[in-house]
Each structure stands twice: as C-alpha cells, then as structure tokens.
Amino acid sequence: MPSIYQLTPPLLAMNAHRIESPLSNHPIDYERDAKFFAEYPHRQTLIREAGMGEFDLDMPCDEWLQVPRLWCLVMQVSAGVHSVVPVYRGRKFWSFIKDDAALGIVLTDIARREGIDAQEWQGVRASSRSQEQTSSIERK
Image (cartoon, rainbow, N blue to C red; front, top):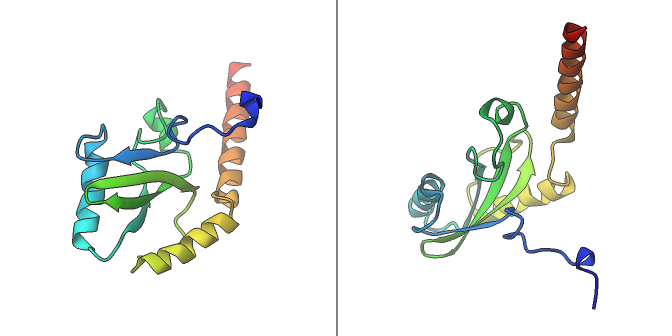
C-alpha cells in the first residue's frame, strides 16, 4: 500500500474547496453567487473575490487586507448547489466576463501564471522585509 504522503488529499479536506447550498455556513457568499446565476441564467461559472474568512481562515483583518486578493471559481453544479474553489491570488487582470467561454480563456491565463501574481507577491515580500527591519531597529 502506498504511503499516505504519496496521496493527494481531497481539496474539501484541506479547506481548498467548498460545496455551497442554501444550508451552507457562508450565507452571504452563497446568496451573492445565487444572485449572479439568477441574473445571468446562461452562465454556469463565475470568478469572484473570496470573502474575508471564506478560505483564509483565522487571519487577522489587518493582515488579510495586506495580502494579495484571493479569487474563486464558482461553478453551478445544479440549481442551488455551487462548487467554490480558489484559483488565483493577486491583482485582477480581467474585465467583465460575458460568458463561460470567455471565463475559460481567463482560467487558461491563470493556469499559465500558476495561480499567482508573482509581481504582486514580490512587492508584499519586500514590504514585509522592510517592516521587519524597521521593527528590529526600533527594538534596539
């Protein structure tokens, strides 16, 4: 039998995927997604910014506001049931996506970027290092 460390755990177990319904624990996010699918009945997918605490759990608000935004792919599996998975962290580089085919193009670009805005992450790291240096100097 293979070692458990060779197996990929389900995304649901890692809090990297959620199935939302009217009974979900995130009613604000669910209602926002349901409203989108009601307004655009030809759509089965959307990409939207993750809500605070939706995936970045237990992160203090001031830190959450400093990290690059997390973007989620929401897929309507059936009426009232949505699959939500984080797909990108960084600045939004797309405009309004008019249909699912256009979203497919955006997702292809996200995959090319490996799901992150590398330039924005470099800025966050540089800012973090600068803050650490300032804190170190102030302690001396």
